[in-house]
Image (cartoon, rainbow, N blue to C red):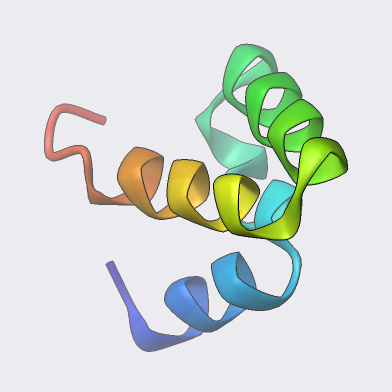
Length: 52
């Protein structure tokens, strides 16, 4: 996880996970629409997943 990805996850969470698949983008987009903090947390969790 690079510094720029973390910064992008904080500023625009759905764009940070754009290469992780459609499901991840949809989940982060919905959570960001419900509130900024849940979207950021979901994006950081998805980016920190070592399996992807």
